[in-house]
Structure formats: C-alpha cells, structure tokens
Image (cartoon, rainbow, N blue to C red; front, side, top):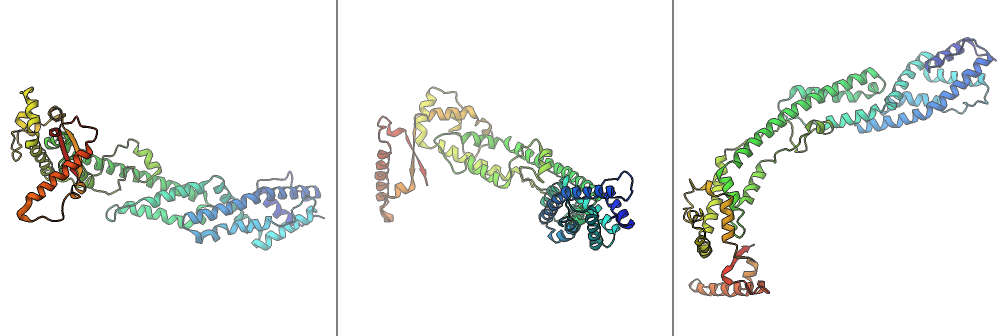
Length: 418
C-alpha cells in the first residue's frame, strides 16, 4: 500500500530537514522502503545523542544554579526522544505501517508537521551546542564571573555590566538553542573580562609600585641598615632586633608581588597569586613612625655592647686593632646616635663577632633557674636570693658543660630564654 499524499509530503519535509533528499519524490513502494530505512538510521544515530544532551543540560543547569530551567530546556529533547524510543523501528517491519505510525505519532505529539519542524530546529541546535562543548565554556566563564568581587563603592559601570551578563544565564533555554545568542553572550563575556583584566592590572601595578617605593625608602634608612647589621651579632639578643621589626612590617604591609605573568594568571583566575583585590588601597605611613622602633633596637644593642661583661674581650681585640671604629662605638652615648649610624656597617659587625668569638653562649631558661629558688625571700635578706641564684646557675652550667672542661668560665655568656 501507498501512503496518502499529505502523509508522504510531510515525511519528505521531515527527511529534508534531517539533511536527506530522495532522488525524485515519487510515492512508490521502493521510495517508501528507502524512506523507512533512513528514518530507522536517524533513530539509531540520534537517540543516544539525545539522551547525552539531556544529561548535559541537567548538569549545566545545576552548575549554573538554574535548576528550575531544566524542564523547559529538556522538554523538546524528551518529546523527540519519546518519538524515537518506540519499538516499531525495525527493518523487518512493513515500511508502509512503520511510516504511517511514525507520522501519526508526530502529529499526535506536536499537533502538526510545522510545529514538529520548528521544535526539531531547537533540538538540533541544542545537540550542536552539546557537541561543541559550549556548555563547558559557559560553566568556566560563569565560575570566573562569579568569583569577581567588586568594591561596594565605585565601579558602577563594571558592576552593571557584570549583573547584566549574569542575568542572561537565567535564559539558558534561549542560549542552548540559539547560535546567535551564544555568540553574543560570548562576545559580551570576553569584552567584560578584558575590561576587568585591564582595570585589575592597572590597579595591581599602582598598588605594588607604592609598596615597592615604601620598601625602597625603608631599606635605604641608615637606621634600618644599622639595626639589620647589629642583628647579625651572634651572641647578643635584644628585644627590638630585626625579627620583631620585620614582623611588625609584615603585619601591616604585604610582600611585594613577584609575578611576571599576570595576564596569563588572569586568564584562569580573577586575581593575582599575591591576593590583591580590585579596589584595594594601601596607606603608606610616614617612616617617622618606624624610625623610633629602629633606633630603640640600635640603642639596646649599644647598651649590651658597652656592658662591662664584654669589656675585657673588646680591650684584648683592640690591642691588635687600634684603628677600629669599635673604639668609637663603645664610647657612643646610646641616646645620641646622630652621625654614628652610618658607621655601623657589615665590616664593623664582622669585627665585633671576631672580638666575641672566644666566648661560649649558653642558653638557660627561666624555668631551669626557678627550680633552684625558694618561693619567697624577705626584702631585708635579698642576699639569700642572690646566693641561691648563683648556686643554681653554677649547677646548671656544670650540667650543660659536661665534656667541655677546656672552656674557661670567664668566656661563657648566659643567654636567658623563656
């Protein structure tokens, strides 16, 4: 039997929309058989791709936080998949019956052939969308945009552009089936990201240039260099050495950024590895606030160096080095450093370490000493405290010096630790 004219014409239109053309459109048994074979091949080739696209669309909606769109996006794919999952698509089935059932199912599902062809176009664009993995590109771009944090004030134009783009993700049902909408969204995203990268790079460079200027000025301070050099004295420790000074600076000032490929980093992340945020500002305090800390450390070192316990060591060294600036350093009034700070250089510290090289630093904790002291001492008998302290220290020193009897007691320097 032959199909009626309307059914035959509709099937030819469907065939053409799938990219097939009959050689001649004559409605005969041979052409009906050929058409039926093509439809079976379409079913076998398309059904797996439909199911894959349904899964991809679901994942896309979940990852873009648009799960409520799943139903609208997948509805055309489910409808066509329902047409193709019937069990009458067999080569041994009568072509006339098969084509008639196929046509009847389409009309009952879509109302008319025009509706079917219109929705088929949406389905094919969705399949192409998935095939080209545009979904992955959208997910990547969406995650990038969501990571961008703009300051609460300023950047109104940029904020509006960002919100406009993100709002378009609420229309995924248009994006997945409209190549023009996909291309327009891609262009808008790329344009925005380029603008963001330019602005970020500009502010990042300005921020770190100010930071670089600050560190440059700090490191050029005579007080900074003097204290940095004094901190290299091996057996002398003071409260205001370079360690707490640097900790203070690190607390209020970040490290200088050493990234040289910022543009490449911004291709994948919204901010530099240094952690700089768009809109971040840095307030550089006057170095006058840091100088007193540095001077205090220098004064502590000078007070330690001028302590009588080192006098013999320095006198012995100066006997053979009577032109050393160490002579002048030992006479400097710690309260008046002007004119002397620049002379505290690496060469001088080397001399100090040489002069003190015959000493043996011994670390003793306060807890160790406390174990040899009574709980209390009368104020009018503080000599008892001194006696117990000396007795305890001698025991501690003897225990710590086991196997080093060749070291002279006068060469031992006690470093108290907590």
